Image (cartoon, rainbow, N blue to C red; front, side, top):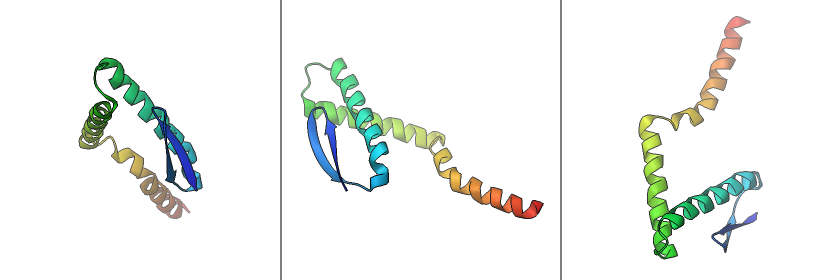
Amino acid sequence: MIYKITIQGQSYEIEIEPEMVERMQEVEDFINKELDTIASAHRKIDSYKIAIITLIDVAYRYIELKRKGALKVSGMGKEIEELNKKLEEVLK
């Protein structure tokens, strides 16, 4: 499906799976908030540079979380499910 995302008043159409709509709305809100935060701190910088500064900031925070292992938790759902199944089998 085609999803229309609006970033700083500019609309973009991207192809996504229907189940991704809610997450894309979160992404849209997150991006706009991050851009607004950087723009309010740097009023004299053009929108392209604001986008680059925001991208650098978000990437830096992502890498910091990755290094601290904070991102590993999200991938553990399947592992926990598998362990629960094994535990149930043993307890039967």
